[in-house]
Image (cartoon, rainbow, N blue to C red; front, side, top):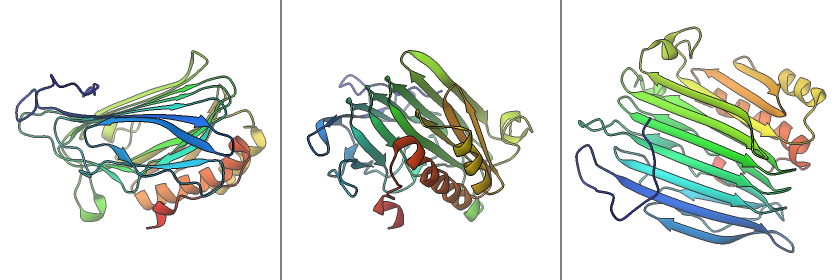
Length: 288
């Protein structure tokens, strides 16, 4: 897996096996008197946010920006988010992420996201999909740490190639890791490592030739069998719903990113009242 590291002036740039262009974004969110506030932001390299939005009162909506628009060889995005006690926040992106073909030296590219929620914090991590183009050498890593009473909903949606344009993922690699911890206990740990055309990509025990897949994770005190039953009944074919150790998973595997996105939006819309005790408030950027 292509490892992302914190930016450092000593990191070399340019072309070759040591090619590197790291970027870092550190965000600290705290509960204010009437709304959650962005207390601190530290960044280097091409990572930014738009100003905070408050379309539903207390909850802080943030849009993460990567101005280059995609990852090329050597790019490493490091995003660290700390949600203070009692804070409420939603983070998304204004467009799909893109991971382009690796260079002739085979240098990888990737994104590492670390999210830490302190006691009774609420956070939603809802980026738009990531498109992994033919020939990429991609690493995607999402690590979530929940404190006592913290509540989380988040997803990762991936499209291999661009099937709508008949750009197939017939070369390249992807490593993806998802981890969720609560109070120091590992509750969910998954690692996907595939090469284009291998058994993980094409086999029945893997993606079975699917080029679009997504995982939604939800963790909160109000998940129960009734919520799960309603969710299962409301989602179309291609989706599955499971729960273990207090972590609910909604998964999609298929060939249609529009179907994947629409189903995940529907799942989030139904889960939000149960997990966060409030109705869904769709980010406006999703419809522009």
